Image 1 (cartoon, rainbow, N blue to C red):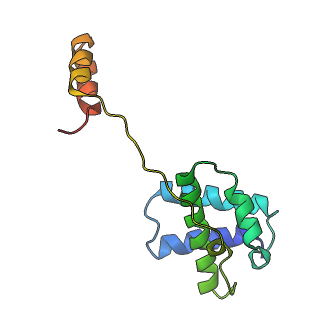
Image 2: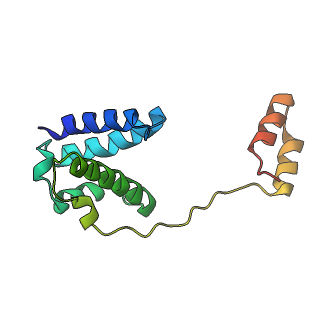
Image 3: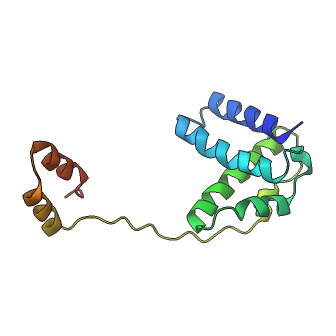
Length: 135
């Protein structure tokens, strides 16, 4: 069995079990898993190892993205174990990255006032109200 076939079965199973609820989730998982399939030359998932997983994870430099993609691989290989196609999970044999705190820039009240004063028309003012931080 090729890795891409296993990916298709995995995604179908995740939809049928209610674990996937949006197309965005499927896209995220599929893109990470297809990158892994490309890195291992689409060989049988029974013959992949932790070095293959580490090679795939090297694609992403940011620790938060790296952690997300590792979680996808852990879930995929856990599913393979539950299906009886593997005896171990090579993604769990990799070190978990230390995630960085996310920082979202929000306009200050003064900056919002300045933008509202510079706005031309109702449409721009409404867009500024939508984009400001909740009170």
